Length: 158
Ligand SMILES: [Zn+2]
Image 1 (tube, rainbow, N blue to C red):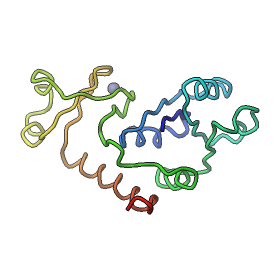
Image 2: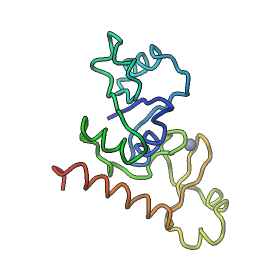
Image 3: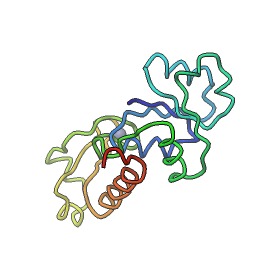
C-alpha cells in the first residue's frame, strides 16, 4: 500500500513511514487537484481530513477521508477504512523524507554519539537526507507503539 497525505496528517504519514510504508507528504497549501493527481498517477491512496476533497469527481477511488484529532485517533480512523500492517518493515524507511534506509558504513557510524554507538546493534543511514537511525530505547518505544496499534486494530492478523 502506498500513500500520499497532506500536511494536516503529517504525523500519521511519518508513522506510516516508520512502519515501512511508502508515504508522500505534500506541503500545506498544496492544491486539491495536485493531491488527487499525484495519488492517481503514482497509484497512491490519498489520506486527508479535508472534506472538500470528497467533492471532487475523481476522489472516489483515491481518497480515504479521515475525521480525526491527534495521532492515536487518526490511527484508529484509518483502521476503520483499511487493514494497515503496522509491522510491515519497521525502520526500513526514512521518517523525514521517505527514502529507503541502508546499513551505515563505518564512516557514517562514526557520526553516532559514542554513548549511543556503544549500545546500538544496528545503524541505518538515509542516503537522501543523511540522517542516521540507530536502535536504542527510543526506537524500542516506537516499536512498542507500532506493535500496540497492530494488536489493537488488526485482530485478523493476530
Ligand atoms: Zn531521509
